Length: 498
Image (cartoon, rainbow, N blue to C red; front, side, top):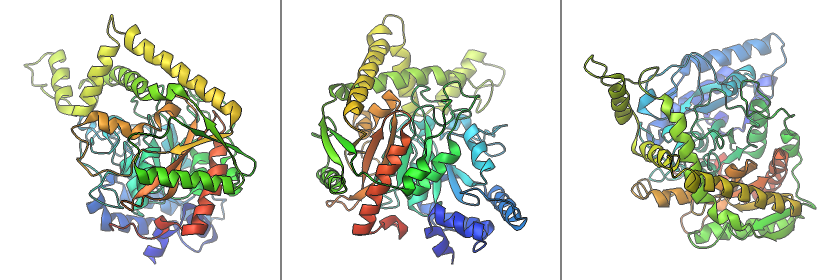
């Protein structure tokens, strides 16, 4: 019975709980058992809140027994990226500097999940402070890809994507600064959405790069992602960058997927050298499929996109060097050298040396240099000008098309350790995703088949204008339905390595 439960979609699970066919406790126990059975191999979770999850599930069942109206995701389990504060359970952000820190409050996103009666199973593994493309930079060890445990599950939210692919949870939350929701979704064959910047509150989300960070939904189907999107999105007065506008009708769009009459853009800069042949093949097939479904394909030229990677790796480290200054060993988290023989400055230095990993130190140093006197205009200032050019390219493109499509990543999941000593090769994993973060518009990755050379998932990226997130779900649902009709949905079965 539990095997059947863990294969259900979130929408199916919620319907069965609401009808009384399943209890929330049964569903939660099935997923906790699955975590116990396979997570030793996958290492998707940093903390499993068994008692808390079961208490939430019992509360849902009690509501149903009292005849109260249940929300569209009531009782559905979820894996939460360990970057959102959670009252009473650890939030480490994948770093030793926050090892054992238990926040005294919930992030707005966490609170909205609880208010919607979503059952939070625990916190998932991630690249330290969300800095990475493989989840190898976690201070607590890497996560494996359920399709092949010797390969990466993407990053920085590899724990969330792996939990979905391994059927340890039907829903998950990620964050996307340069592609950290979409790239893990692509390499694990799941669905990941980066909402419009400001559409989901960042209050209580540990900051990496404040002008780029965005939380978003992760799931195994487009409809499940839409249901979760609707729960977590919306204006928050606690977040000064939060957009005070209604949430776009994402669930309605996901239930009525169609591309008939839509103009779909293909950007010439999103292909070429460094793209795996199987990824390009599956993308070209997806474009042909969109054509067959009634879309008009429009070729686009966005020259500034070639500069996006360089601009991102000046802006993001600059903002991270400012945001991470608060981790000083004096206020919260780890503290090293406080034995009465060291000054406050020495304690801070020793704490950061012990608490931060190599990638975090690399980005802090790069960002501090880019912001330093004499270099600010040459580096950070120039990068912000490029950012404006990228936004203009998107604005011009969206005058001609309704959405843009591209491969989500240039390659499928690479072996763990292959790029560990080559930061530039690692950064190239985000080549297709970064422009969207710099411009602030919305994007989705969904599975579009397996690459023939390695039989690993390939992701199709859909990009929409600011606050037109519903277009992602309208197109995504149409593509998903066409793929399922042709090939079925492999992730509704067993992941190959498990």
